[in-house]
Length: 275
Image (cartoon, rainbow, N blue to C red; front, side):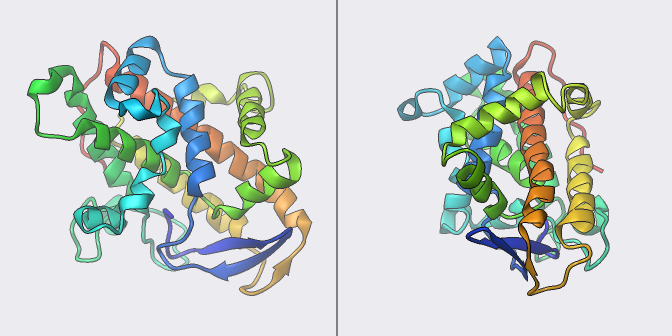
């Protein structure tokens, strides 16, 4: 859950209820992360596709989406407890803005301990893939999984229930149909004129700050503006917010693909520190 100081939308069947959520909420959940990673993998260029398959364990048969939820599964394990603050950004109440130097820190004040900092860090680690197995400073498989997961987190503006309701209500419980609709929307449909701007990123280290700022702005404008905590909301709320959630999933997939193509491509560059 990227933005823990904000309210999050919880769904009960087809009725949406606005409620406050603690930092450890459901976030995109398995479905949102899998969709982001499936979209990204479909957009990989040959060099990146080969690198991703090479880094993944053999038992997932080259399917990145099979492990995109792994960081959520291990965040409370003792070995990975350091990663828990990386799943979100704790912004000041009602700030509706993200300032990296102010907001990207852990509970103890450690710098860069937020989802935007994590994306920059794991991107930088993956740049060492070109050095081959002799470079053992980093676990590059874990870096790939963390980067892929956090790219989903940084685009999240609601919790999992809007996604689950959409899959159930509109796509007959078929997540693959939902994915195909999202891909159609940015290849030939509603978002086709916008997709090139989604992938526009001069510096991989600073772009996660842009993505976080987008999500915070959308959450302030759409997630709870004009409603009150505990208020039961109509299906109109779901219908008006689903396009925003869908677009964020697609943007996350397109941008993850862009990151991986640049990381594993022939002309990758070092990642500058985020700002």
